[in-house]
Amino acid sequence: MNKYILKLYITGNSTKSQRAIANLFRICREELSNQYSIEIIDVLEQPHLAEQEKILVTPTLIKQLPQPLQRIIGDMSNTQKVLLGLDVVPPNLSLN
Image (cartoon, rainbow, N blue to C red; front, side, top):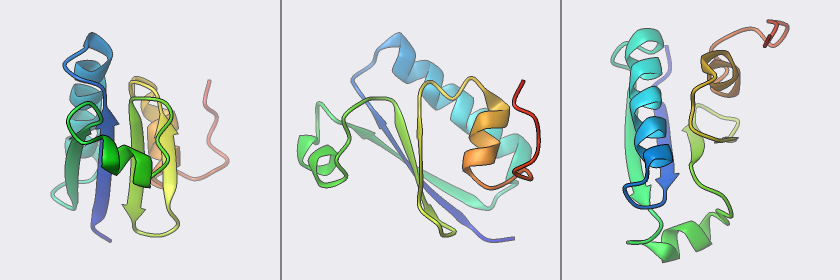
């Protein structure tokens, strides 16, 4: 299994940011074993990083590795959608 390198861009300590962090860690624990690293980037504290990645909406998750690069926007509450974005589930899986 490839190691997943993930960056989650959030805005401050908002409810939506905290929900995205909790959901992402839960999904990774359940589905990726110990094969992941997560970097949390607060765009209020590091706006230059958000600008580099062209982050317009938060929360935004960027999967850097394994390739291809993927972006997932939202609070990560739709587990199947997140897994699809991480290429953990087959693309023909229903998202309903």
